[in-house]
Image 1 (cartoon, rainbow, N blue to C red):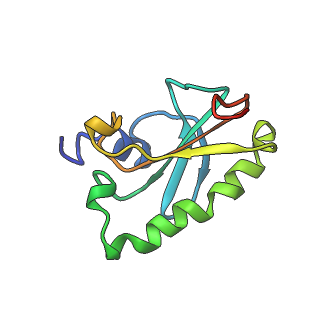
Image 2: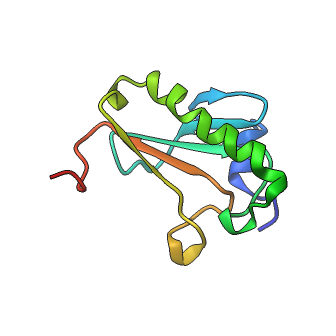
Image 3: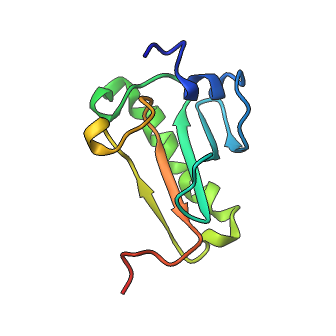
Length: 115
């Protein structure tokens, strides 16, 4: 898939509708259309990076921007006040469905990992 065909690139360019939660010059955060939890937000860079395997030193600032904005995004969603999970799937065998690097910000309900 080329970056011209990438659904996340189209969302970043506002060519495809999405419920945007947060945006700045480098990243976009929006609601997942197939959520696995009460809150399921995807955080993507506006530039196309296929997966974590493609991240290089030149992407350091954009990856930093993604991570530094997680708590800012989470503070705006009351269901995440008690905690959340961040997941990065890499490659088809790692569960990545859209070949554009992204963070899953998930919460709003008790995790299967809690005792």
